[in-house]
Length: 418
Ligand SMILES: [Zn+2]
Image (cartoon, rainbow, N blue to C red; front, side, top):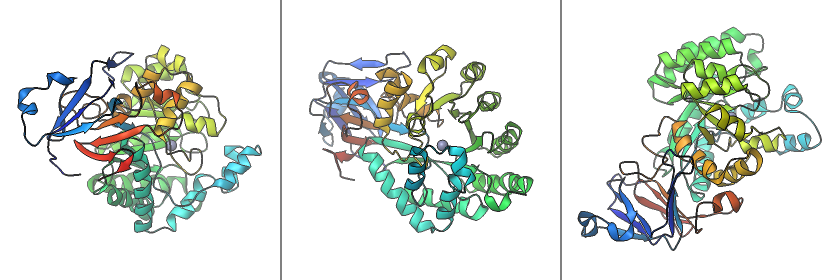
């Protein structure tokens, strides 16, 4: 992406939708247009109202929205997209009735991907991630969070994070890296739990922070993974080192993860299938974003979190793919927005806010991306649809006709151009 592309006018749309903090967001229907200059949104309004300084700029480039809908670039706030090897056999086992826990006990699950990822080079991992970012971009995703956590030893965790950095370099998608060394206890440390925790806290976290290999630190706080006390120790250390905090919380059981996220004022708590009402309320008052993963609950045939509960608690809610080779081999964020409506009971507006503004907040970027407002980064998607409710409706369809990233057209008429 060029650092300063020429000013861009996206016009010819039939509607514009952006979160504006209200439950239904802001829908403009009077020939809306948007102008981006210096990579940032300079103006939005009815097409005839373009300010003269932009209207008369000889460098101004026009992008025809072809009667589509303008929305903010999508933000996938929770993925494990840097991995080697698929696990289709496990999916078959689950279809036959095996549980997540029993598959893990047989050496499958996260530890199966750890074996494959340890065997992959940094170049191989970067290339795998790059091709996944390409696919996401074609679906309108302009920002994606990617976690480590399939290394579970210092060398491979760092290699995963370096691969994330390599893949993000010169790729239009903005990538936010998260260190997730506390994803599972590695098999070879089964009798050295404290030793592994010390490696995470004393070696990995300071190194990751110092080398700026990640901006966030996440922990899988769950029975069978890491306890609330262990998670608190790890996350407190991460905060001392300047990392932002995230928690995989209450996915398989009510384990106190939501309450811990609130106590530590984490950016987000994620999954939350079994979170208590008290935990959700504590999250809401601490400003912790609830990141809900509808494709994962569907894949695991788990009971989805009711949007009504999250609304009652007052949580800001993001929806993300959780893209990973086990519980969510789904890289399609618009599909997940549709699932949020069908399986969780979100409105189309909540689903869209959940993959834009609230997802940005889950990454600490809500002042930068996630809404179409003057001053924000010029990340815009032109949907091939007369209004934004089609995202919730045409499940799995490719609706991103054009994608603009920081003012540069990177997808035009459904094809990559930069
Ligand atoms: Zn996850």
